Each structure stands twice: as C-alpha cells, then as structure tokens.
Length: 66
Length: 392
Image (tube, rainbow over all chains, first blue to last red; front, side, top):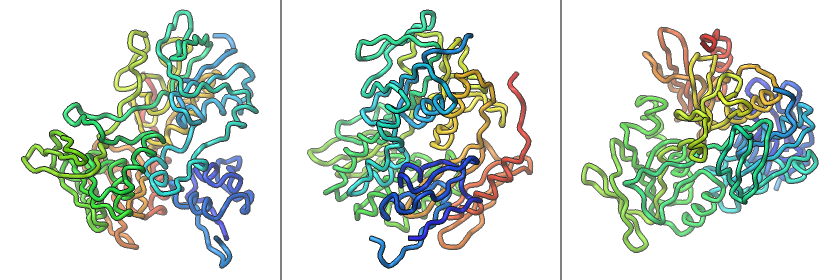
C-alpha cells in the first residue's frame, strides 16, 4: 500500500495519528507525515484516509493488501 | 498568581485530552487530574456518527491515546465521574464519587449534551453524541426497516447516510426550508438536500415535528402541518447545549457558554474554559464565539494548556468543519453569521460544488462538496485576512 499526505491540504488535525496508530506522526510544523507504513492494518490506514478532515491522505492499493 | 502545583481538567473530549497532554508537553511537572463523565478515555467523537455506526466499529482506533500514555505522563484519570459543584473561594471541586479535589488551576472542558425539545421527548428515541449513544443506535439500525431523523444538521445528515447505506428507508424531517440552512443558507442547503435525495433519503423540509408517539414497536411523528411519519426508529438531531448546569450557583459567568477572554480565562481567578462549552473572545472576528467543531475544540485544548501555564497568546482560530455524507466530503471554512452575496459553482466530479460567501465584497467563508483543494485555497485566503479588533 502506497500512502501519501498532501502537505498543502493537511492542517494537522491528527485524526490519522490515532486512527492508524504508528503509521502517521505530526512533524514540528504540525503536518502529518508517514512514519511507519507497516504499523497498522490496511483497513486502519483506509479508515485514516477517509476520515481525514481535509482529504489530504491518499492510499494506493497493492495487489496483496487485505 | 504563583506557579500552579495542581491542575484539574473537567471533561473527556478532545479539548480535555489536548489540554492534559499539552500541559506535560509544555513541561508542567505538577499534578494533573482529568475528570470525565464517560467511561472511555477521550476518543475521536467525529466517528460517532460515521464509522462507529458500521458493523465492526473501530472502537480501539477511535481512542486518541492508550491508557499507558496517561500513566506514563502521570495524568490521573477519573473516568465515569462528574463534577458536581465548585467552590471558587476555596478552589475546591466536588465530584460525583464523593471526592473533593483542590486545584490551583481549573480547566473546564465539559463539552455539550444533545437537546431534545420537550414536545419530542419519547422513550426509545435516539440522540447521538457519545460512543455509548453510537452503540445503542448501531444496535437499533440492525434490523430496522424505516427510520425517521428529526433535524437535517450534521448529526442528522451523517446518520441518514449511515442508515441509507444499510438499505434502511430514511425520512429526514427538517424544520427549516433546507437541511443545514441555518449554517450554509438555503441555496447551499438545497444542494445537500439533493445529495440526500439522490441517495434514497426522503427529505421533508419546512416540516416541524410536533410530537413523537410510541405505538408498540413503531413510532409516529406528528408534523405541525398535519402530516405524520411512521418509523421503526427515531433519531433526534436537534443540536446541543453546553454542559454547564453543574456551575449553577458558582460565580462563573455562563451566557450561551462559559464566557472567557481571548486567553481562555474566565473572570474567576484560576478558572479557564475551552471546547464546546466555552464562549470565548475570538480576536479574529472581534466577538464572543462558541464553536462546536472538532478542529476548534482540539486547538482550544492546546491553547488552554498554554494559558493555564501563563501563556496569554490569544486563541484566534479560523473555524473549520467537515461532514461525510453519502461518501461526499462537505467542508466549511470561515465564519459567516450573515452574508450579502453567495455564489455557487458546480465542480467535478458530480455532485461537487463550491459555495463562496461574501460580505461587503470580502470573502468570509467557503462551503464545498468534494472539493478539498478549493477549501485549502480558501483557508489560505481567509487566514491572510487581517484580524478584526482586540478585546475592549
């Protein structure tokens, strides 16, 4: 699964940080970045992407994603 | 005021969560106690009307920080406990478990509670604010064929989406001329109504629910115009009010929310407030505001932590909210209690649109469906607008 955060859209609301625990973190400017793409399930990463208030997260599925 | 030794935070929403952790992130080493009415640790309340209504709800994911994060930071949590009264002279807070907590700073983030108009009170109807409410509603949605939703606001709209996605026949009963009309105006509200209708929701507008009657397992909602709606389940989404009843008799000023200055401080020494319960002076607009949005509450929680430690930076957020309805992200940025011009533009993909609100020729807010880039651009434009005035 390929995960991208659009820095122009992110407002640092941090919903992704708890929804896919370990995958995202906020940097010093309060912008989300991918810390460890393998830390949560693909399902949780999809939850984080669709729950992003600014639609800043996109995920691209690989063939082997659950 | 000297340096605080013990800070008590009343509340268990995101404002309280950001506050207690914010105190530690800012190096505060004294005692921190969080008193929360709910049994769960602070969670993502925005999911209550979204994924938490689905089968296999993401309950663990919704919790903002695990119990260890509180333990590691020596944040004491009193869950399932309410604040019952406050003695500001002695700086003592009484709790429902009989405990009395002394404090140097008290931060009130007690949030809000759903309003059910007296005429609509009826056993078995649902409201939605907390995780517990979502559990009850989810159980009702299983096996429900027809649902009535009173109120076309954010809660009503998101529950309508969740119910329609389950194949439930949904009737939305909106008192105004369009859903969300009070916030986005009738023109943009009509677009939201259309979004509901194309997803199978029956939307009744200018429809005032007068009474709800239970008839065996079913409910009958009588409308003021003589029509009636029958359903197996009813959700009332009629807004919320600040949870401040426990402050009655205290000198804390409550006027449509707990009134504070721009630095989150009430007029009572050592008492601050933030989140949905607070009505604070927002220097961006030069007026007292109470905002019920997640993003604002979160920022407010961080700001009140700083304020409790003596940082008087004014809290001046740009209001922003979003709502996911029928797979479309609705977003709003700005503040527009009134406007004199609205321009709505269609945008791809269908049924996308961007609504721009202007006052005296100046952009004051943007509401959009499925257009996150338009909202991002609006945010930058609105943020660069000079602030109004400072507090008198």
